[in-house]
Image (cartoon, rainbow, N blue to C red):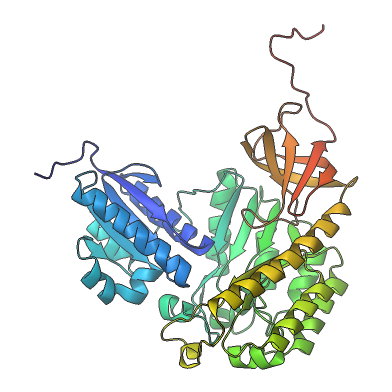
Length: 447
């Protein structure tokens, strides 16, 4: 006989996927808290809400497995209700309802009010910027737009997230002020396409104006840009970046490929020559910029020549940060009409080759940092190290700076000048220029 769980009225929000999902979960949790609901993030609760990802095959598999795991807990009486929201649910709701019927209810990406109602809570329109952040206290994601209008052939985001919709600048400033009041010092701007920001609201690309407003928020010291689209990039953003010290000399600009043949099939609206010139303009205008990109290998029709073109270009461009993914054949995308003709083992081999090359480039660039001093923010303590980042590194995806916690004490969320003493391919090691040295245990300090 099924027994009820002991813990009552506690909602556990489980987040899968990208930083945009993290943001959505935080908004959900903020609404629940405002309704006097007890809520935790990836903890224990008798009611579970799974915020899923439906972007590519691996992410979909992880989401399905997580749903099945909590449904099994429900059937075993360990939890009482399971709700599913997010991209997977938006994209495959009828299939999920049929295949996993023991979920209490499925919700799409734009159904927050309905989800709250199912959780016996009311959607509060007045809660602009109110979130229950789940990141370390010193940084937070700031989603400046939802959806995407780009026609990229391989991407299902418009199916799951809809058309591009910018948030008004005034709302984003209010949200940033509330985050700063909670101790947030770094804003990581996210959207499916930052460069499109403002076109729908202001009839122009307005990212530069948004940045000029955000740098005025007291308490915010770093502002970082994620997910910029290369076509139509607003160059006035670079001028603001160069002028304003609060804006990190960093940009995440997914380029996906460089072979003209593949770029055309991907419907990226650019060419190798235009992309190379754009990156040249980046580095000319802001010479101290770290550029992060992501690439896709194994796209339909990618020949060995196309791949070698990409590999040689990566070697030439020497990106500070780079990630590489294998192509995922996604239903209802334009590329799904093409023959997925690159074998999986070839896709993986090509991805490995790119990352091996990037590992060497990263190692060489990191060696150049030894002996130099960087302003770093401390995210956390892990094992015997304090873990920090420079302005050239974003959380979870980039280099980390490791400082020996047995020798030095550094407060989480604070900035320190760190001199780099050693470096590997993806980690830096350093020591603070000025800090309080930790006293060994049981040693009495000299008077």
